[in-house]
Length: 393
Image (cartoon, rainbow, N blue to C red; front, side, top):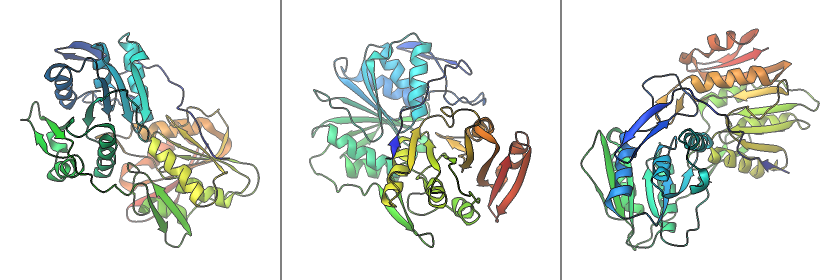
């Protein structure tokens, strides 16, 4: 039977910790995953304006604070330091891990925080206060605003925040359409507070998850709101599927690393009926999308689905084949650190004769990074934009 496994082991870290000084306390905060860029930090001015609203604008000391999309836990930790109870809703297992590690770094108990994935809502005994950080996509924004409507009675106020560069007319139109009347405050350190009042009218429910057929491949893919390429197969993945590795028979272990909707894992399951297939992603919605993709393609019993930090839960020399379409963004920052970490993990987890297949944009230069880590790196396919690389230990 298909299985969704628990969040991975929590690894302590002390790299890149920075001090956030606020009117309500000082915190030492880090980012998980760690990125060596000195310009990056675990908070922004958008956290500050939400904190001011929650801690000064209204009396919320007795209310459950429901915090959405707290990327590294900065707002959650500050609220807990100020004796609030928090339910944090996040699509990022790494974001949850950052929250726990930052609580520990500031000697704060995790007893006051309830960590929920992006498809789960708390069941408060009384009306909570919702504090909302804008997500990366309008699809996830719309899905989550509908979630918020289900939490709050008519007339409740939802406080949201974003950096000015993230805030567009279309964003405010979604707030108006899903919640109700919406106003924004003046910018503060390039961040704005957004306040929406829940109106009586009930908007049409969004169509999530989406399901689409992949032309020529005879498969259907399921995508929840935050998953990359929600309405069609991205061209990099298509190139890898067209030049898929020959797996052969036997009981093998195959990992779809950064699985998204699970299309690479599904392709492997079809080609290798005796193989054990793992789909791994830091996004909860991705892991659930992959699970439902296997189910809708009548392979529901073939996969194991694991949210967490890459391959941390796999033993050394345990995998025969790893398939990977690595990201080059995390939250709102471009980064190669995640891809490099995936390559390091893959080298450890592959069997001596195992292979890592990577598809990526050609300009990222992953060939050099792989050559520094693997004995053999060959080009399996390429087009004008993407390259498929085959690495052997």
